[in-house]
Length: 234
Image (cartoon, rainbow, N blue to C red; front, side):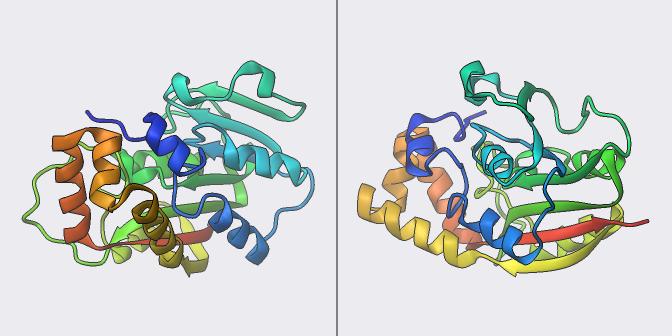
């Protein structure tokens, strides 16, 4: 499988946050529903740890987990009440009802079974715990596209109603839904300025053939970007 998340071009272009708008969307969600000082949080699919560090700076106790050890922060980046571990978000090494909040940003669409991760989030959250969840969605979903293997959440998103149903089916009540497609549009504009076109950007990330295919797929799906804050049902 091609992996966009480990590409140096992708990491530099998105300032290691690996999603549209970087930390802007995270900050907007926290402004709507802030977390108290001392909240225990999991950053699921944390990558290089941008969100985890932001949450730590606001006074949270944070664990970041990612399956790819190559993009986890180095040991010298750690601090009190902040740690990073390699692991699978579909099988979390955490006790039931042990955390106050989970952040999962632009990750679930990369998984073959996102429902397994949502079930784990429900298990580890305390009653009333919050899920801060963002992902791409397709504005023009079509069944004619072949199975995707580009390793980017932009290339195979589901529709918005499916995202809502998944949350409900796995025990979450949506408190806040914010469409952040503007961040995706702004990021695309910046990449066009830097690389000449989004197609050339994807070619730089994935190589000429895979990049061209990924770019065409994204254009066909016309992806949007949404940020949910949901609460575990009690």
